[in-house]
Figure 1: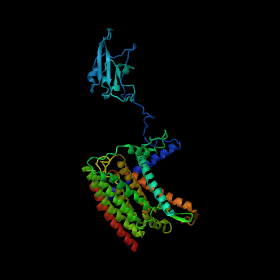
Figure 2: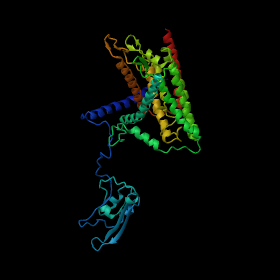
Figure 3: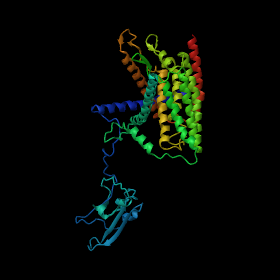
Figure 4: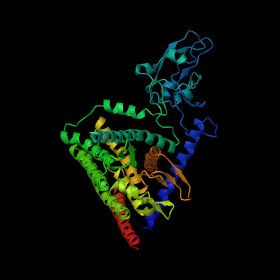
Length: 157
Length: 357
């Protein structure tokens, strides 16, 4: 009986918490309705397509390949990113460059975004700082898997 | 002839009121749960880009449910499987006919009771119809020919039957205080005053009865603190094998039960359509002043008071649903048989002693 009474008191306390949330949030909602400025909003929701949250600078988003001043990719096709990639989504084909300074360049550079897990290992492995994940682009959903395979033009562009 | 037309109008009005509010209870539940959890809730449903805080959401849901595939499992007992949601829905919806929405309305020398049927044993009728709702649950669980659904139905039936006892017993004290089973008479009794100023509502005369009735009625609605029959998120419940509109009917029944419980609470314990100190000709305040009102305004006050009270209890039930976790099954049974029934019996004894003094 005493135990039941204890439960009952806890039940009352619980309902007081939710009622307080309801009343306080409704107060702020009504303040917004009457266009009165308040300290905070009634809800913490960010209404996504219209409002967007600021992405942190270190957020790992869509990849991009850096280019030199002459427009060629900075990548030297060393295959380190291919080796380190845990989901094996990078495919690089090396070709010989006539420039003795460079010697190798990627003739194809493909990232399969449908497999990529956005771990950022490729960025850390790259000795030339040729691949970065700082575009801040997070909306690249497509209707087919083929469209998620990004090639050299898409990655540098 | 004109009597028939009046009754037809009453039936249509009561059903429209019931269904419309049930429809919007789904919206209210989403919104209220969202506000409690610091969210916004459903606000996207729109017609031509106009979205008034998601007020079109129930219609969007209804359209979705109508166009979903109505799947009847091959192994089910087809007739009973189709019948079950309608039984469940019907026996809840019919109870609205005994609820008084207001006192008499006088139009053109005719007195119209704002109640579909003024049954002499209205309270018994309501309780009986609510109990018959068990048939819908047990039939849906049984006819699905799915063991999990069957067990869910059994669980539901066991829970409802055990709380039915407490529900009935908690009302006996009330019947002793207001010596009638007629719901409109009970409401009339609640218009009297206690000590000259306190309205003689059931909540002041039967506080323990109210508590027991409320808990038992919450268990009857099969919603979250007592949602063992269905257990939306993990247990497999009695309407597992239903889809589309038939599933929607079960869902509607749930919300309709919330509404019916609110109307019952209002009618039995919170004075129904009574406004404190409002008599048939206007307000008579206990401090002596008066405020006389025309008949139409008084009726309007009464219906508005009834609706406000009902909405408050709907709000309270949604709050309860979004506050508490689910009971374990043995806890539900313990609460029902070991706590509520002895308490309601004690309530009867205490009421009898107090009445005889």
